[in-house]
Length: 485
Image (cartoon, rainbow, N blue to C red; front, side):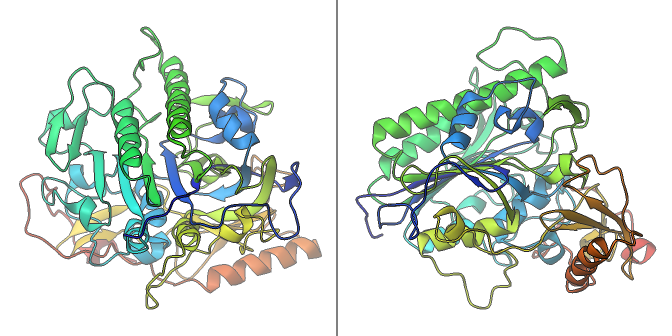
């Protein structure tokens, strides 16, 4: 691989509306000319109501806040409402209706479907082909490492340390925090007396230290603060789930600080762009106070508390500082953005849904390319038939928004538009404007409907090569003819 003396570190984390505090020159801020390193950090089940940079009032996240204050904080960045739809979208650059991962599908626990590297493009393989050293640590959950122990390598990662996900019939694998069960190139095992997030952070940092003579891409898919609720290393015994959740968010912030300190000591901090974000909203059992109102966790919901994720991009000398942005971004944009930053090539015949926002974060443009973004995949509505894993409906629930208005598209064919909200004046989405006579609202609705109608009328099922049934697979109990609409 080609070696580079200087690199930039990329860290994405939070989103808000476009206000520049730091001046930016007309040609973009001054920066080095060589390709940046990229550190992508994805927290698990954590909405904006748990990031103090966004106005969270029940917690302090000073290190995430510093990333935000010294970078770009996005207000309008959408994930999907559940784990695997978000993760597969960022890995593939495709919406769930195209890659088929419309539902959450926990591969090690439920079997059958898996993310097939022969049928799906991976952001890691694109970065690897461009000469980047690639590494992942944390949660993967879309392959079963018992079936394919080298899945991460085949998806394009040079090295990896992954919590396996809960493997049916293997109780030890349920542990992701204390005594975690982790898969590496040496196999899967329990790390007795250790804490998972510490193992993952140290693994990534060691890889970066060993590969800092070339550009690198590191994917840190944190488990924190997803349930089960536990007491992390910096606190003594806690009793309530709320107190444990707060402490787990605090520890995610502490791990970030440790990584930033080590990167600085390596001489890699100024050469790296960091992206810090989350896969979906907080668990619905948890309530946090945000900018003067109580916000219940929105995981599995397509309301803003479920999909409008904190999203922060930081890169000293590369990304403008002190920016609060209303630019539209969604998770399909991550792959093309990283490819753009790496000067990497995406196969010409690959169907990509995302758009690069690299020119925006590099201050070469004043806005992203997006006029609308999309999210989908709330609730688990898939089943196993003789054909494999199939989505329950031909067309699943979708939401589409511009910078102000949001359209709900019902899970029904032909299309039915059930709700329109003004997010600027109605952040809790209480008022339905779908039948408004206001000409401006009618025009906004028409534009969003046109976007919806331009999308495929049928969702794909997950694309994978069928394998023989395994002992832990769920039995086939339904046929597609019974429930496909």
